Image (tube, rainbow, N blue to C red; front, side, top):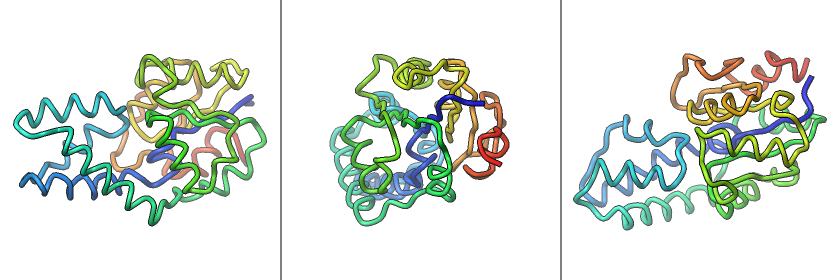
Length: 209
């Protein structure tokens, strides 16, 4: 049914969004700020430059570069200590026979670090990151590039995503989209299948029995 399978990384295969929220709160606390949950929700699935633009717009009076540095240092320390996979991720990766790739809005260095720490780097034929594209998700370019590297037509690629931003990018590229929401619920506007877990999504899409 599919010639290739493509995964988003953060919030889809690895459980980093909750860590980012916790360490982000710690970073803001150093500036005497207690942000609303809605701020962190607005950042889910966004690339670095877009995240920085949102923060500068919301907090014009603080040093955003220093805030991001503090957040980065806390996040790196937390993920170095523990970087758990999402439920069913390892099982699913082991059952897929098609070529697999990562398509993430994280930069190249960060993406490969996370894959290495999570112990799943060897599972993927290609890793497409923010550094590999000129337009980030929700633009379809990242998924079109990933499908091309895999030698597969986008319509023959099954994509796993957690965020609306990522699902919109995959849908715009013409891929079949399974959305497994992480911190935020979804109405499934950009998804062919919405599931509570990776394994459930794979079954709904006919990838596994």
